[in-house]
Length: 287
Image (tube, rainbow, N blue to C red):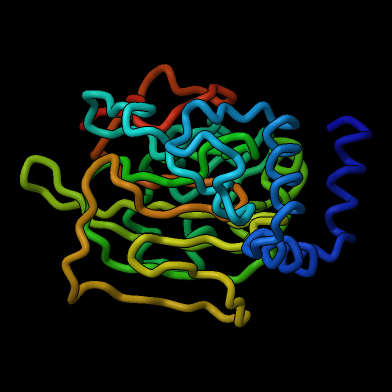
């Protein structure tokens, strides 16, 4: 890492990240009239947000910053590819590929375990030994709703408390175990391929200024942030979401990690770290 990158990472250890995030979340969800409008328009200019893709392209139509940030897209903006698995988000590939036994690559020189990412759930982690993963980073300018890579029935959701480091590429290179130490929401699904059922997981990773994460079946998961692991089991409910359907959203953006068990799917060979991706493009095929 360059000296400037090391300094940027070191500063994050000192910042009151929880306080900053709580403040940003409180401001983002309040209708502040002209203040909100100025913030939205400056954000659009700063990050070159393409409002022509939005279902509501007029910035003045959004009462809160969160309404703007989680804006829906036009129905024709993200057509689904004819692929077994489709990309669940707009963003860029941070890392992807094979899980080496129980370890996933975070960045050059850094890896972490599936078990740590999944909050210490050894039984669940074992299902992904030698499986496949994709870590997808959503920048501020990206569309921030999350969609299903394939059809799945919801089995469990877990909120794991943690740090709130930034998840940008610089921080991924500088903070060991970043995705397994940040706050996260783990969504466990059951898919089916050729009559065989298999588990897959979407992990929504929080970050500095990420005010909250929400799912369509629960609503806002955080806040509250009680500082303990919280679990919700859905085995007795039939919550099945089709490929490409929205499953959640970030209220200010972050990272999504997809986990697939071994022998189920092969990732798109064009997927390499650093490549931009869009929701609905081919992510992979059944193995």
